[in-house]
Length: 153
Image 1 (cartoon, rainbow, N blue to C red):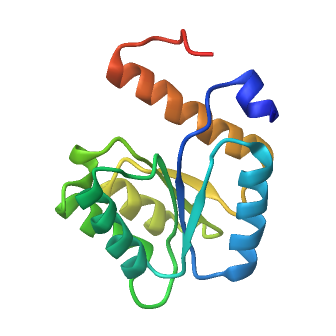
Image 2: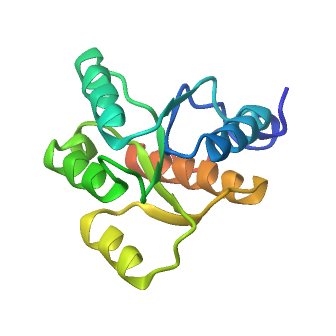
């Protein structure tokens, strides 16, 4: 059993990773799967693929609990993804935690993410401590939304 499942909370059923960099995806998927915080990592290389997947999941009544999103991608970038996510009201339908991952420290990017969404903004590649923080934030937010407090094991 992984350290996360023993120390923190039950694993989430699915995490979505949207990033055009295959090396970064390999690193993140390995880190995530080794951590045991999810049963499945679904990867797309473009925002439009991610949006198509989310629409399919909306129709099925399931959504990934955590979405990791790169900002700078060709075709549909992270900003366009976030705008579509909120326009389609996915934030109201599902309680996914959005995390913007980028190696950009451009203040304009950070400001734009904040204007569009309530997504977390984190550097990439993620390390184990940052992944643990994302997982804990997800569960704290879920507990607050459901009124369960911190009594989960």
